[in-house]
Amino acid sequence: MKKISIVTLAVLLAGLSLNLAYGEKDKGDGGRLLIGKVLDHADNPLPGSVVYLNNTRTQAVKTYIVGEDGSYRFPALSPNIDYQVYAQLKGRKSDTKTLSSFDSRTQVNIVLKIDMK
Image 1 (cartoon, rainbow, N blue to C red):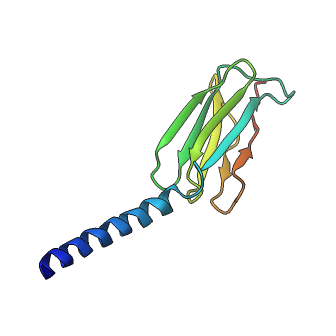
Image 2: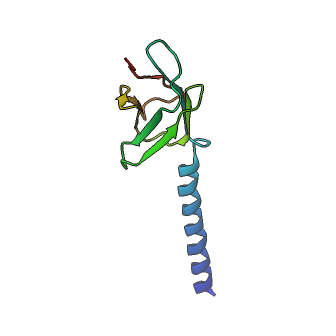
């Protein structure tokens, strides 16, 4: 009977530790949201631009093709990772901006400007 109790206790503790681990991971209610626009230097939207989001920890890159209004969005970003974001259009590139893990905002708006001259 004691062996069953020890096994049961081990299973309960394992379940509790998994719960705590996933609870920590999911903490933050879906992560951060990065939004913004890609504009030229006259503040006109640049539809068709490609926005690149680089996870500096894993080097994974996500892309977003900008619509008519120049807007982009990357939802559910980890608050514990730094990201670099930049845009490209017709061989021209914006400056690279950083979304820091030290920035505690849940929604961050970054405007990317491309010189199209």
